[in-house]
Image (cartoon, rainbow, N blue to C red):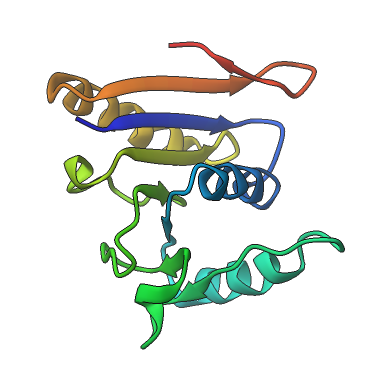
Length: 148
């Protein structure tokens, strides 16, 4: 069964949180796939991950002919072209085929009440399927705390 982590973004944007989570994923020797809702979001995130820090970048690509070689792939669909261990779901992406991954991470913004409602809907069936489901929320100091 997969580990499923729900990250409730209350104090930071996806662009603030995702790079750190991707860095930690790569440090474990894992590959990642990041699902976004549309091509515009994919292109924006693609550009951002190359420039998010002056002293670093995240090696990644999009769903192209070389996708199998990329340690991180950005996609708008349910593909897993690089054999990723971790799937990041953003902007209301729906968790499917969760058992194919070691870890699935749902990132949803408190600024989008519908996204919060949808995330809550995903919890019961994932838990009932036997996945190790946890909920993470930021403390006032900004540290991530496991709340459920």
